[in-house]
Length: 358
Image 1 (cartoon, rainbow, N blue to C red):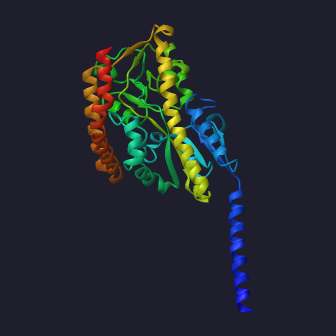
Image 2 (image 1 turned 180 degrees about the horizontal axis):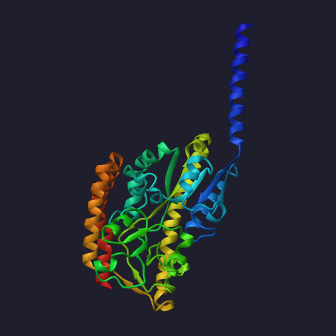
């Protein structure tokens, strides 16, 4: 009799556990995502929409992501604080926007003279970058994941041609991240302005120059109507956006939905890189015909050298001021050295060969 009672209790416990697991599997979750971008912002906004669609399909409707654009939450550069506080469950933005709050965050977007998109993704997923990023965001109750790459960004729109270092002295320019600090070292007055305010700032002479992304997005904002000189890039060779997630929210999700989120974020990031390549190539093909006033320029060698030296100086200072920064910088530089050696005999060698043949 006692054995039968024990067995019955055991069967009941198993059945209860199984029923609870089934109930959990059927629970539905809705996550609210705040993005830095305005509604229907091309490429960037497409990335969050693709992510939300993928999550919904893969979870068979158990997980829904509701996106609030900057016009809704009214704080395009407040995503960090809103996700940290739990006001929003998730965010889509760029890590270097938070350097004033947590200086080490800026290393996870793109670094001047640093890795290209392929090299940087390899660093994130296979070279320890993801682990370092979580070390930085963990104390702030957040997880950060790669959120889409633009590839090499253009160096900016200028009203006047930049011929020497003197032309940069006192120049007011929208340029965020570590590149802004590098430009400051050579005399520029850098500032960060929300995307929706860039055209007006340039038009009203609040700034003299603006760096945004590349042809596909820059032409949509109309910078070519104000500034004639469009410079090639150096400062953001692999600009990575980010998905931010409140850690308490993440921990409440079942393991299968967490994995669906990981896959959807990684897929959306890849899709954005491909989308950026296509859209920029398409816009570049038409730029000279549609906007003959635009002159494509490269910064003179002496400016590049001055910026390169300023970049080295600032990296050394950052490493001396923060053990975490030193850890990230060391990891990135070591990985770049190893990865670039192969890029040189593969990607660069191929492009050089094609240039000679053509």
